[in-house]
Length: 185
Ligand code: HEM
Image (cartoon, rainbow, N blue to C red; front, side, top):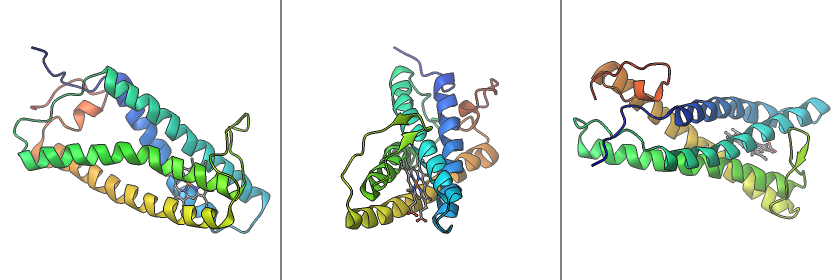
């Protein structure tokens, strides 16, 4: 019989926080840059946003590989069944969105006719041809998917804080690589 680890493996923890940080950078940048008048600065911010977004996509591939390679700790036994199911569903949705949000931006950018050149050195293939109407629909899709991910992130963070502060269990601590003292599970 295999026992569940007490903590997430370090690569999983590192990827979790790296992706979270990059999303926190891409979100406000995306909102800010959209309203700017056309200028070289605006185009530069668009590039930074696209590079961050593509990096999220690439790290998400690694994240899935790390999730397969390293078994996650089990949810606390004291957690009610409904909450365990809700946590599993929430994590599945977040996994889907860390792929779908960047992909929607990449396809939108392709439809707009602006190729993404990752960090200014690696030209990425356009996923669709230039198409103004499609670009408009994808822009709306990208925006709405971002609203969904923001709502899910708020619920996710609230749940983590509730476990840490109110239930005082190890749910948040085990995603913090620098904390090695388990609280009760
Ligand atoms: C973690 C990944 C990403 C996040 C969180 C994110 C977030 C956002 C947000 C919040 C906006 C503003 C939406 C609005 O209010 O209209 C936006 C706009 C935009 N995003 Fe992303 N994005 C991501 C990935 C990408 C990627 C990978 C690309 C392209 C390769 C991209 C291209 C764009 C473009 C071009 C806009 C501006 C649309 C316009 O105003 O014309 N995004 N993004």
